[in-house]
Amino acid sequence: MNGYKIMNKRIYLCLAHMSGNEQKYIDEAFESNWVVPLGPNVDGFEADLHHFMLKDHPQLEHKQVVALSSGTAAIHLALLGCGVGPGDEVCVQSFTFCASCNPVRYVGGVPILIDSEPDTWNMDPTLLEQAIVERKSVTGRYPKAIIVVALYGMPYNIEAIMDIANRYGIPVIEDAAEGLGSRFEGQALGTFGAYGVLSFNGNKMITTSGGGALICPDMDSKTRTLFYATQARDNYPYYEHTHIGYNYRLSNICAGIGRGQMTILNEHIAHHQRLAKMYEKALDGISGLSYHTNPDSRYESNYWLSCITLDEQVHVVGEEEVTIAPQPIAPNRNIEALRIYMDKAGIETRPLWKPMHLQPIYADAPAYLNGVSEHLFRIGLCLPSGPMVTDEDFEYIIKTLKQAIIQ
Ligand SMILES: Cc1ncc(COP(=O)(O)O)c(C=O)c1O
Image (cartoon, rainbow, N blue to C red; front, side, top):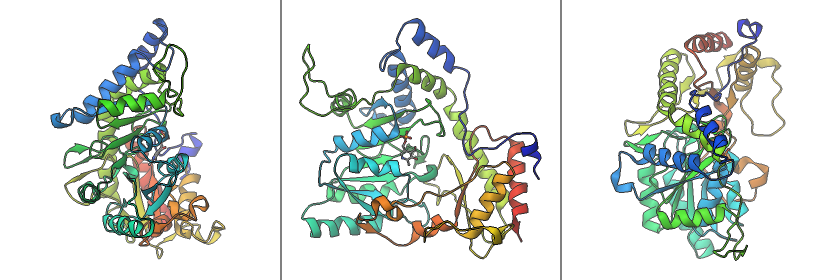
């Protein structure tokens, strides 16, 4: 079973994978001395992203892309774009990575955490509407924005979310950091709401080593986003500042990596989606194990990470030795045993995100809950899914997983 460990090979969740075209753009930047956070690669990368996201939807071509230093920066700037300030409430999907939520605090806002629906694992529209109505009765004001998250690439129920958001006049920020290339009814995630967020961190669908982008509704909002992303410098020959700004622009070198990565994005998406199909088939029939898939034909996940859930009654080798983490709410014993078993075999797996309403830092945030994300956190595990996972790796992952589960 430890063949991979002996060969010194480890299979990771989602490793960066280069196309071979990246170096050309980096060299061009060096040769032309564009070693700064602006330049031809930044412009070219933004144009490539715009084309990828919007080419099939000419009615949305007014949308604009701004390349930034991270997805977190993009969420922060989206909140500023929505006018969120101190004391303003923002409805945020609770089941997510902390970066979806932390920027609400950066601007002095109050996150209102919303639980998930069982089929997409993303924001539950019914709870969202309940929260909007109730917050109005508590504070006299509607929340200032809504942040939905495409968890593991799975599209949110954007139809229902947009319907609610439009009825109450609240802008939607789509956190598609994990959802580059995912679609709902053929339209790219990140292009439905007021703002769309992408991440190019090292573990995402493509990487710029670190980076992100904000899809803005129009040229005015792009100009405002650029202003805040470059230290909010007013239009004078000397340095004059009437606003607090940030240093959030993407470097021309990193954007060069991004341009190279764009040449291989479609292949990456196809690879993740193919692996998902293979997982679904190979894991079918294991009693108590479920594979997370598109709920219906409107949803087209990029399957950034492939995820499974394991019923508590399913037993896993080594379960008795597992010492559960000291927190009252933690992944079940069999999930931790499976993670350890896979790890020993040289395979990285990871529990699902721990929901924000269970995080000590957000203990005081108002939360609208239905138990779904907490349950998923207890029973879920992410499996390797990136472009570096070969067919041989896949066979090894399945073989190891089946050895671990006592059937
Ligand atoms: C859901 C989600 N939102 C936001 C981010 C933040 O992106 P970045 O790491 O580029 O800041 C990440 C990933 O890191 C993420 O998974």
